[in-house]
Image 1: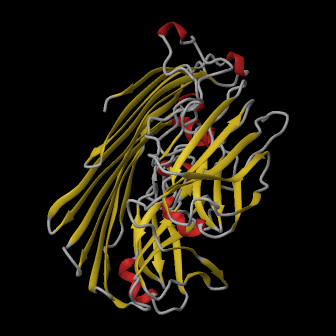
Image 2 (image 1 turned 60 degrees about the vertical axis):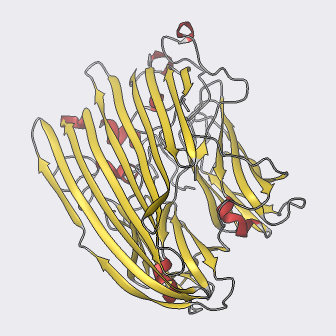
Image 3 (image 1 turned 180 degrees about the vertical axis):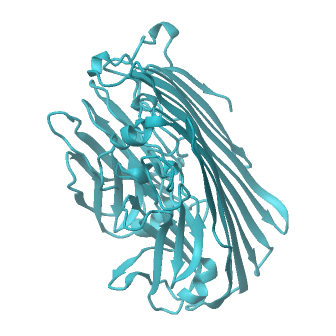
Length: 540
């Protein structure tokens, strides 16, 4: 079993946990000359690096607070205390989270989270180390959690790990927040809430004057089982090792008092041991691996119902997961903007309409077995609020689609996938001022195969794409826009079932991260070979 079994075995952690970047340590060479590229992987390689842009930092006074500085050897969470900075006030133009890590020896990829006052501000995974050791860091704009940072809170962090005679890598981390004085470019939420556990499930109580409500869900399939590779699962009678009742379609839903309030396509995360081949990811990780992007749901159409001062049941579920099977984590933050001139805002839900989920998988047996999947769903919700500036109606329309072709041979010695997911959302606002809309279309792609030859040589070739197009309009006129294209390609091979020094592993990878629009441009491309950074090019 090549991909589903070998790759699933590379992630032992069963407890898991804006734009983030991982960069090389200061002073590391930007690129290696061709003569410096080793013939195969050795005991050391370049520190992890991504082509994503760093967080822009204002040129204003700043203050830094350490959230955690610890080592992870097992599944014991770090617990500490957060105190707001003394010398930077309580309003900030930007708050930047930085995670610095280092590890050496032998270790699997691990998943982790960081909570402040119960609010999840980071979900992350780790690179796999070289025997000589690596360092990496992640940066993230966390200004939207400013409400949480204004008060003292408990801090909890966990990167579940196993250290023994074989897996020797102890994970050292330091997490800090840097606060920059000044006004933020966009208004941060007035409140950041988490769900409350009750005997009847999880509930949410919002302020009675809420005029915008957005839920964040950090959804990841993980734990080393089949749900880590949910996009490869098949339904009976297909003869594949990872089964699911209806095949590979997954959809993350959020419900309010039992009513469907939001749908989203999960990102097909690949951790640094994934697709049976860690040599793909030693230097350049897959998009989003070190800074997992939360799914966002605009729940403003439900604000009129939520604003009655009572707790409301909020449930998050993943469509397609076999009943009783674990493997998904879906913690929720709720961001709330309040009406500054009214103590209570009333309103109502006027539309909540969903199509039936379309989900078909066709199994074609043969020398190369094949499952073709076509799936999708559409939801429209609309509601109004009577605010201090008049009646405002918000309508959210979201359409999901997934197509995939999964093919494998007997024994899964060849295992390949060609898949595309689209998540198309429009949020329209009518009422006070000009009519406004934001249209976001996200597209995720995965195309690759793992092959195990008769000579025990395992090869993985893989291309991943993370794309997004965003257009904002006022009274039909475009006022802002952006386009993102983050593409990773990799090709790596090694000999299995032999000691590490006999694997003769080779691998190349390339990432190009392009984003351009009304706010500017970033275009960076990285290339690696056998752990050496061979190209680092910026085009903007």
